[in-house]
Image 1 (cartoon, rainbow, N blue to C red):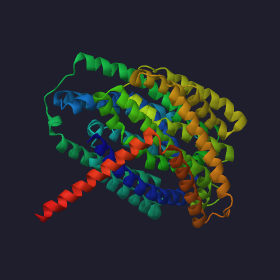
Image 2 (image 1 turned 90 degrees about the vertical axis):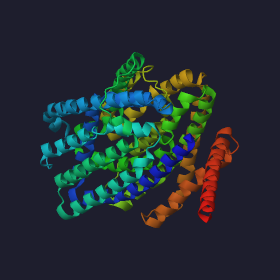
Image 3 (image 1 turned 45 degrees about the horizontal axis):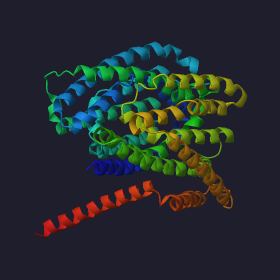
Image 4 (image 1 turned 180 degrees about the horizontal axis):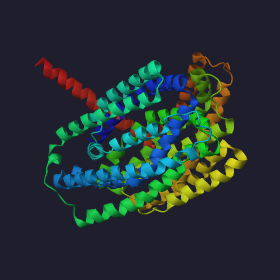
Length: 518
């Protein structure tokens, strides 16, 4: 059952993301043609500023979701209600705090926007961003409940419809009016409707959470939540200084236009990640259920399977980006939208390092291991800021990205596996690091090999040329990895799991046909 829920989450998420990727590229092209690179840079900058204010959230949501896994598995409705009520109250207070923080931060916005004088109505734009961020807290407790219960796929189809409606409507608004404020107001209006509808669906599925009776948590659970929230607050601060400051640094030190150029790269890398993350992220709630109900040996086997999938997916992603991303940007947007080559390579290194953390981070978070390294993200963030400020003077844009690389390698790269292996698997992390080195070597080898093969193709930016490069990048690594890993325990387990799922589905279809005949 756990595996089937994961497969549903994965398959529906993949379809949703594929549709949104296609619409996203169309929308970005229309956005650039209608408003220009400066507004694109502003959009990326304000997204980072909003993520900075989300630090106020402090990890409350993640901590409560972790505590939901066990009572949901045991059908302990009293504890579920108490956690949902706490979540709702906490996020109502957070929405008010974020509004206050946003007002305080606004006067400093001009100081981080270099060469952004052509942008008008900045105050209105800023507060529309803030409103959407606050609205996201309205039903956060309900979304977390259904996701922790491995039923995220229930909302996925509806969310896809809303996302498609939003994207198409924004494209029409841009073409007809070229007005960024109308564009944002339309997005906000549809998002509010989406939140209300989703909330009603969750209430219908879990009617017991609508009770007006107030439930309290036991002392142990409260202590656990408070401890985790304190630790996660530090994690969030560190995470922001590593991943949330790039656009702010680029905007203030180089220029808001460069933020726009960089955002095209991040859009593509994030879209690809969004396509592949459901495959790994879809098992997140299942891992929480697994850790709560199974022994460490079973958890370790599933981790090794997840880590192999993690490598395979992100290796192919990076190989494809290395060969196709820049030619694709030239075909999609035209020439003049590329960053320098060194910056591009460092971006890909960061995509790989961040992507390869998915499996180990999933097990760490779902096991509730937040306190063990609560100060590490702060150290990571400090290293990133210091290194970025120093290196940008000598290496320009690439220096900012290298700061991110160094900060991750010196901290979370090794602390996460050490913590998970010690507390969840009860063994040495030596095997993890050996496999990581092997996987990284294979990725580098495949990048070089596919690049040599792609160099024999025409240097034109035609769609056919892009398609041929894509075929090379998908076929060669997958064939090599299949030959290398098909005899491993991890691959055999993964293969048998998929075979069993497909077999059960076929049997179910056969049964349904027989019932209809009767």
